[in-house]
Image 1 (spheres, one colour):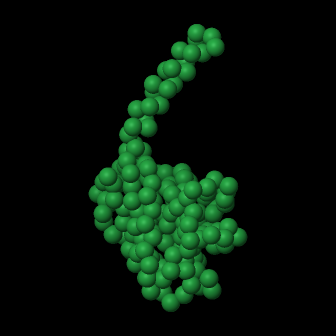
Image 2 (cartoon, rainbow, N blue to C red):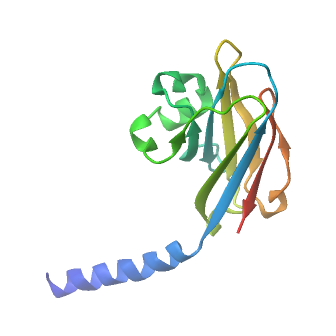
Image 3 (cartoon, one colour):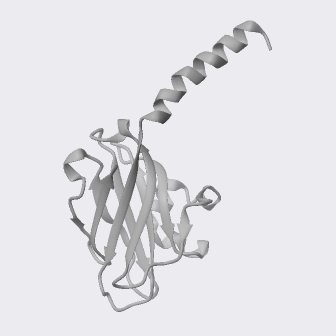
Length: 158
């Protein structure tokens, strides 16, 4: 390798490492209502200050053919099921709790980002953006009510 290329590579690594060190573990908890139906498919994802999709935190529900019912998430993410490796699990039954762990950059806090959760259940109405939680220090641990399937959703930072 040439000396200028090594210098550029070393500089890039030096700049990237502090950014990685400033991430925080986040735990998202969603308590479902006893809505009287089958297990719900849920998509928890992050949007920026303009409402643009940033990344998927978790998708609960194993069959990708039903992801289209998580309509806001599906539209914003482009329905790219290939990028879901490691962030999917079983659907969540009525009255049950979904708990998701993720790493988020501290720079996203208080910068207009939102955690959104879309919900859908078989033979019942879909609920796009069922819950929208501004990613702010003021909302840490503060329950946010859902519209149809989710009783409340909260996030904690460590």
